[in-house]
Image (cartoon, rainbow, N blue to C red; front, side, top):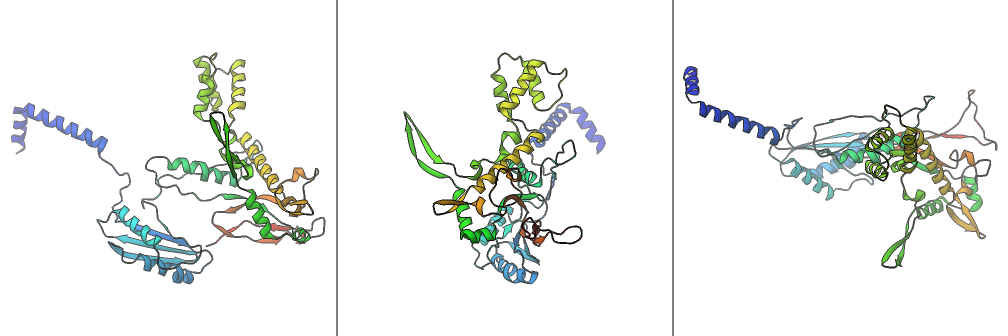
Length: 410
């Protein structure tokens, strides 16, 4: 059999060459067009539903969350079985469908059932479905904190968390075929106002008045149109704390965009292409050999002043100064007026109004920058004690309290 096949191939070279070319063309087409799954998923359509009920025991979660969700999801077309698990503050349901059921059709059916949930759930409990694919993690990364010359961290966890949530995560989701980005760790920044009960009683102000004043002061106001010749300009008042600008998205933190750098260098006709290349490399922090000439160094300094820098040594102080500016703005919010005298947040917080001697201590008490852990629900406060376990008192003889970090429920 093999001998006859060889004799036929030798006697029919044209046919053999045509078959070889056909196989080569077909292989090249398959190489570039056939979809290859790097992590194949042979499992059937599995849709997981997760619901958090902070502070509830496993029995309460089973009775008030898990069972109502099981009733809601029962009877879906193609559903093979539903397996549930009730933990402290957490309900987990795993719905497996038959082979042949489209994953996206099953996912949409679960979403429709959850939106039309006939079984009531406790307030604040919102069930969520699992990611699109159960393949798992493809890439894991961490954010490290740069240090100064004394090995002190330049950023805090609030900065790293904001950079992850509002910059990196959004950029990663723009990458084709990236379904989701899950982040954990870090702390979420928040601005805290600590009222003094005695000052509140003195001015007759309630906590609800403070909340209402802050909420009304942290908003933009729309105006009318201003006709200027052939153009019409929209008039509005910027009332958001900080002007509605996120300092984490500023040039002082993220640096200049490449298109802005190209436009700035393009507006310098006296620079040669080699000079522009060297300045561009030096601006990005790359070593330049030979070193920049005095003219190139002058251009580089002007470039830093015009477009901003992204070095951590300059970005971290900028973030702290922006926080202080927002703290001062919060202190100037007017809560009410007594005898034509405006009563501001600065008048009712711990430590009282800022003076010339206490301006450098802004952010230490009264209006501070705090943080909470992700999904943090409980906060504890305890009196401060010295090395001999004696209570620490302030200048007025009152005990000093310490706010511990928020604890994660469950």
